[in-house]
Length: 332
Image (cartoon, rainbow, N blue to C red; front, top):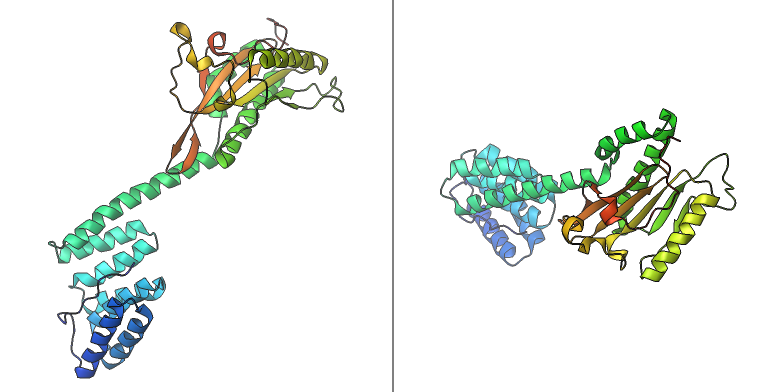
């Protein structure tokens, strides 16, 4: 973090031999990495020559190296006040603001420094670096916003109209739609926080008919996709569970990486997978009237896991489980 200390006296406004000696000693300690001693010597020199901009600039560099950022910023501002035509004050201020991660303000300070010394390659490098840091910080903030504000409902608007046409009452389709959205959002939030999702089937139980002491709203099926046999056994169990629990609908949630069988992303022709090789989450919705399957792709950007918009798949080509409910074409 240490910045080069200005040793020339071009910005100085006076001072005697004692001040020069203290400044030179301070510079020596700064070069040796003893920033605390350097700052103390610059302070003594400032008492002898309080209008010397070079001394404040040098002490700002020492405070910056000590991570005393408020003091460093104050000294940088004093440097600018004492000699507003000298680029070093703006440069010091830019370095401090950069350390504070105030990239936009730091960039403005470095641009002022460049105005006063257009030939400075050191300042030009800082401006280029700060521009990239500012972009990186902005993108990191955007990613965090996307990760925090998970809203699956807006991605399922087209499906909402299909549900309203299929189910008899508004209350019915809204309950089922909320069930799907909640299931998806819970899975995505878990993926964002832990980079994993438990393989489960969530059931929308009938409040009036289901024996809740016997049937839970979620069933773990972590071994369902290990082989054709485990897959078949799981499907048989789930179909019976759905019938006996009087469930209205169900949602299967599983990471792509947990599936050994069936690997629906390896199909050819009309079954060809078009969503790349990245991991992600399968969500399969089951009901007597409607069946749907989505894939929520996942990517890693700047060390952050981010789920993308859910992609609707052809359930005939990419179903993870066969039909759980007996088919029913009419409204509930």
